[in-house]
Structures are given as C-alpha cells and as structure tokens.
Length: 285
Ligand code: ADP
Image (cartoon, rainbow, N blue to C red; front, top):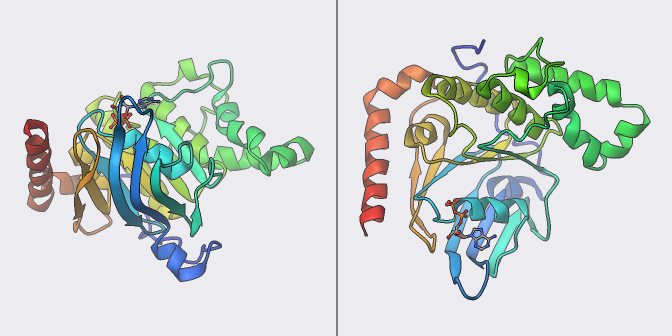
C-alpha cells in the first residue's frame, strides 16, 4: 500500500518566497518573546517562546500534556494572537487565520455524509480563491487533484466510499489529503497518529515522509511519540510543563532518506533515549 523506501530526496520549497525572498525562506515562522494567557485568572499558557523555522523544515514539538503544544499551533496558524511578543509567518505579522495553512488532528473529523473525495474537496469549497473557482468551472480539475492526492497515499479506489467504510488509518490518510488539497505551504499536525495502532502509525509516518519529501511544505507536528518525532523531524523542540517554554532544541542528524530500519539503529534509539530523559526530568521537576 505504501512505498517502503523514500522517493526522491527532499527538496525544500526554496524558490517559493513571495513574502520576501531568501530571508523569509530562512525565517518562515518566527516567534519572538511570545506569551499567551487565555484569561487573566489562569495566567500564561505559554511563556517567552522564541524560535525560527525555515521554509521546508520539518519540526516536531514534544512535551507533557497541557504544556501548550496546541496553543503553539494556534499561534502559528493565526487562530490565536499572542498576549505579548510577535509571531511572523512568511515575513508578515500574523493577524488572523492564515490561508497558507493546512491542519489535521488526532480525530480525522471526516463528515460522515460525504464521500472520501467530497471530504477532501471540502476546503476548496470553503476557502477563497478556490471557492469562487469551484462554483464556476474548476470542480472537475479540483476533483482530479484530489483523486491524485488520494492515490499518492494509497486510497485509489476509495474515493466514493464513506468514512465509516474506511479503516482508522485510511480515514487519517484522507484527513491529511484534505489538509493538503489547497497546497498549503505550512502543514500543522496535532497528534495525527495518536489513535492508531503501532503498525498503522508507522505506515502513516512513511506516508507523511513521502508527501513532505515530494512537496516540500513546512511541517509543525505536535506529538507525544518521541520515536515519531525523531523519525520524521529535522528539529525537535522540547517544551516544559505549563507555563510552556521551549527547554531544548535538538537537531536530528540522522541522514535522509530515512526508512523504518533506522528506528532500530543506535543513533535513533540514543536520541529517543536522550529526549525521553529530558522529558522525564521535566515531569519530575
Ligand atoms: P497541550 O496541547 O500541550 O496539551 P494546550 O496548548 O492545549 O496544551 O493547553 C495549554 C494550557 O492552556 C492548558 O493548561 C490548557 O488547559 C489551557 N487552555 C487551552 N485552551 C484553552 C482555552 N481555550 N481557554 C482556557 N485555557 C485553555
């Protein structure tokens, strides 16, 4: 179903820099002294976050529950604004929800009354400029695009099935297609594989790796699974308990393309161990 080995080497989207050229590509997402308090009574959910993510980078955020990982995602995608500090994406301050973002979550959230294809097409029916084009004449073209995307994740032949006719892993594949159908430059994933069994999860890692390798979008992946973080990411950030701060930034030096075999090798297991120890220390502190 899924190609075992990685396809062509990853080609970061270096040329796509409408927001300001090379600098914007190097500093695609910038957090500068960012704090967020949902309300005064409960205080800061995250504190003093400062980091830079380059365009095409695959970043994983790990940390204990409630540390602010999802809050970080909301700030990146413009669903929340900082109480203090600045968030810039593609060279511009984030002032509201960004159209260049695609999102997928632990629950695939597919609409049960729509087929797989129609679920994948949903963002194009809602988000401008696709919405107007969809209504005019591009439905067939968009449907072809969605079919092609579904085929790349092994869902060819399932386009007309309803979500309840798909396995959990297939639903999650469809959900990732829906997040990518408008060709976002930034893909935000909030524990997308957490509800899947171990084998399916690893298959989905490979699916995501291959999509990212072929398309070069930037990924921010929130996960509790350290093996997942190390297998997929270029850079892993470790967050503290609430109020969430970035405690560590760890580059994953394991060469690409990576296949599942690397997860049994020493550099991989050592890095997972190191991260596990750091998080253990945070939890005990
Ligand atoms: P994580 O994703 O790491 O589990 P979250 O970012 O969801 O953490 O939450 C960080 C903290 O902010 C938690 O203490 C959570 O209860 C709180 N929080 C999250 N969303 C809201 C909200 N809409 N209103 C108030 N508090 C919130």
